[in-house]
Image (tube, rainbow, N blue to C red; front, side, top):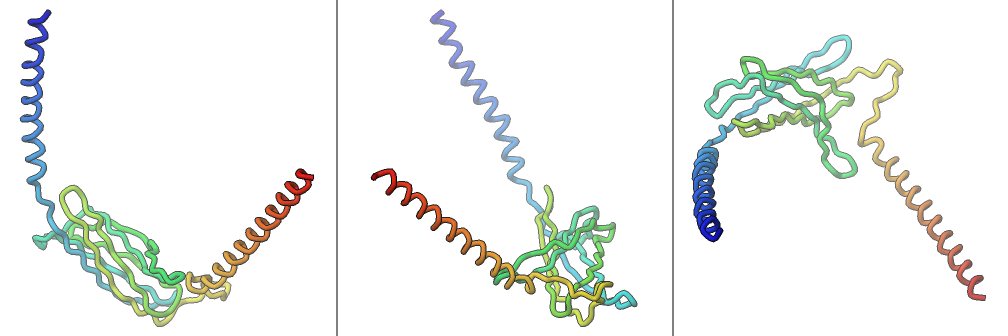
Length: 190
């Protein structure tokens, strides 16, 4: 039995060395893979018809070698300010064609300057990239019922008011509970 234990340690050590060499080579090969950079550009084309103003945004994705990248997912989003913070509002997404381009029709709800961001998240071979474009909207088509669209900026004061009311009610309820507990304690101690 003593001899069996003696041989077990060198065999285990050899197995460990063999596994380390085998998997170590694989890890080193994976570490040497370089991911390619990407370039994402975006352009706009203003279109106006009887339904109002809309903008066709066209994104083009190329590798760092300037070759178009097809079948890649591109996301579009609009930056909006809400309660002092900039937030990205998703607008939609699309897949690039053989030329590396994808188009998205953006229909703004309010006039003014809008910043649209375009993203490529990357994949196993390519790094992600992003681009943005500023869109100046001069006219919009009102909704059929004539009401103006509800935007984040227009509801921020109402949100603050609602939060303030909720906080006040919570404090009042908390005060009532504290008073009730004190009364119960004072009655119990008599």
